[in-house]
Length: 214
Image (cartoon, rainbow, N blue to C red; front, side, top):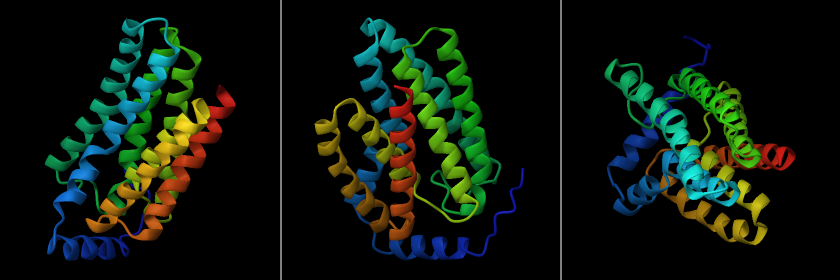
C-alpha cells in the first residue's frame, strides 16, 4: 500500500537518531518506555471505564477490548511488518513507512468501536474510542505532509480527555508532557517541531471529539 509519501526527509530523521545513539540516555529511554502509546491508551481507557461503568468487572471488559483490538492487534501488525522488512524498527523512524500502519491501526480501532457499541458500552467509553480513531486519522493526514510524534499525540490526547472529565486533574497531568517531549528529543526520535505538532494534533482532536460526544 503506497500513499506517495516522499522519502527525502527520512534521511534527516535517521541522521538525528544515529547522532543521538552516540550518546544514549538511559533516563530518556526509560521515560519513553513508561509513556509508550500503548501504556497511555490502556491507562486512559482504565480511567474512563472505571469512572463510567456499573462495575469493575464491566470496566475490565471494555479495557480488555481496548487491549486486544486497539493495542495488541496493531502491535502484532507492526511486528509482522518488522519481520518482513517493511519497517526498520518498532518506533518507525521513517515517515515514509508510517501511513499504511496508521491505516491498519484505524481499521483495528473501527473494529473495537463496533464491538463496544454492540456490547452496549457506556457513552464515554465509546466516545474515547472515537476520539482515538479521530486522532489516528488526523495523524495519518499530517504524516502525508510531515512527521509528528505519536508519543506526544497520544499523551496529549489522554490529558485532553482527563481535562474534559476533571479539569484540575487534567491540568496537573499536562505537566507529564514535558518529560515525554524531552525524552523523545533527547533520544533523537523527533525534532522540536515534530513534538509540538504531535501534541497539538492529539490534544486538540481528542478534546474536541470527546467533549462534543460526551
